[in-house]
Amino acid sequence: MKAEDSATDSSAIAVSGGRAGIRGDDPAGIRDDAPAGVRGDGPKGDHDGDHDGGPARRPDDTPAPQAPQAPSAPRIGTVLAVLGVAAFSLTFPATAWALTGLGPWSVTTCRVVLAALIAGGAMAALRVPVPDRRHWPGLLVVAAGVVVGFPLLTTLALQTSTTSHAAVVVGLLPLTTAAFSAVRTGVRPSRVFWAAALAGAAVVIVFAVQQSGGALTTGDLYLFGALVACAAGYTEGGRLAGHMPGWQVIGWALVGCLPLSLPGAVFALLGEDIHLDGRTVAGLLWLAAGSQFVGLVVWYRGMAAIGVARASQLQLAQPLLTLVWSVLLLGETLTPAAPIAAVAVLVCIGVTQRARVPAGANRDNRP
Image (cartoon, rainbow, N blue to C red; front, side, top):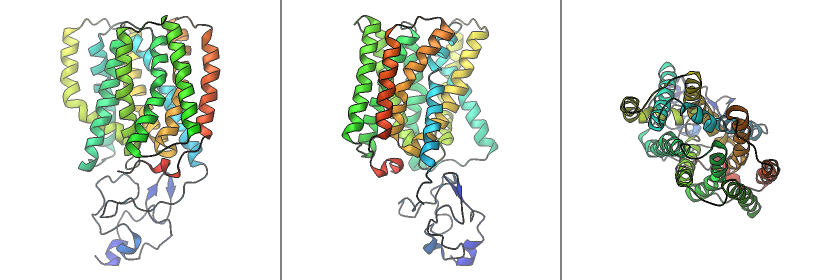
């Protein structure tokens, strides 16, 4: 291809990670009229099919060089991850509300259908291209973990477990996600990080045992299964967020589930009792729009910015936030141990955020 042909490409101005420049994939500042091979973006048409505004991929599928992150990027990533945690903290109370008028299968399938319609409408309006086929296995893991597995298993658990108890058990999710991330991406956080993560998990376990009287229930088994499913989905979604915007990661996972979730919702609504009221509708709408879509959008964006392992530890605060919502929205009783657990968990979060994580952690999302 001639250099002048490439220079007229409409994608000559690119934005990557919120930074606009001469070329988003050209940290060295090479001119746009340089030959395609010099610019490092390959011949026209060699993009990997994502067209997500990120750096163009070279023909050998090696990630293009990226400019160093701006000093504010980690802070922004942390804020986005915290917003995701805040959204997730309302998931269990919203599920409890939705279950007052719908069955567990109706809640699970309807939330997926509604979230898929929101995501699909946004992608259609913006004409987002279909991801490259090499990303679909990862998207299927996201769909199985955070679109189907976690919502279904936690909904079944909440039929027998209280919201506060379920929230505390799911407090093991940060440690589970960090472990999945270490295996999947090869990133090895420091011993201080793991010590703080284990300490936070221990606080959560002790709190859960204290609340339940030391006995595990069927609901706990559902919750432990949900932990594994969600951790796998979070890890894979965080990896994919290095290749496409976070909202497209969860968007395509939701849309990919629509052929199954739509007929599933029809059968569930026909087979289960339905008693709709304001609380049921409000709970279902939050699950679809807040927990299933918006929360995951900012969460995956945050993980892409600060790394899966570091972001996952922010979720140590999620059970404590959920406990507050369970008191305010559901009238459940907060035990005296909750403030003590809250302080201990916050200390653990602070340590994990300051602990050393390998430099590649923020870019551990490359296949």
